Length: 283
Image (cartoon, rainbow, N blue to C red):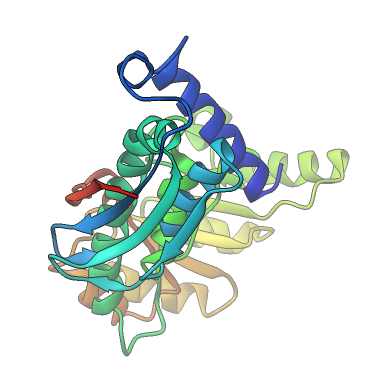
């Protein structure tokens, strides 16, 4: 499925989870034909994310919704600003309210933290990657928020890249065997998949160089000094990725080594949702 299809699938399931057999709070006191409007008020500074998602949610329920965006995804936001206005049936506004806010608050938090990391990388060639450390059934929008914040998406799941990590290597019986089997598998299945392998020491890096047949080498829990040594061994033959123990305080030290990518699960799983609210306005 493409992005739109995946988003529609997410919205469908999220609304079914929330509404069930009916939004009885709305059904009991609001006329079915009543129309209204609402504004999205920003209550915290950060990077805005989820505007396009919000519009898609409202229009999924009521295609004729009038949605006016005053800010766009990736914009800096300040307390008191209005992000958008929506005009629709009151039933639509109230039934979509919580899903819209949950998505936008979470996405804005991730985009804001991602931007802080990306800002630290200005002047360096290193790019910031996300990981699969995401919320089940919400990965699509968490990774979209990373992109909005200026980061780069790593593999989306287990199906779009071969990543041979420590457990794969140990279960398989070593780096050499894991790489050989991965390449045989790709050829036999006629798959267009890149192969990345995790290394835990400089000796591991040397083994990978001897075998070859990979696209990227992950340097896991290496110090910046160890990464510099590893990069000399690799000598530009493969893409490189630093991972593990990297944060806002030390990311520039890692970027200064010249490593191609730095991956961080923290930009998603440590992000704090930002405060937004949807306020009703009568027509």
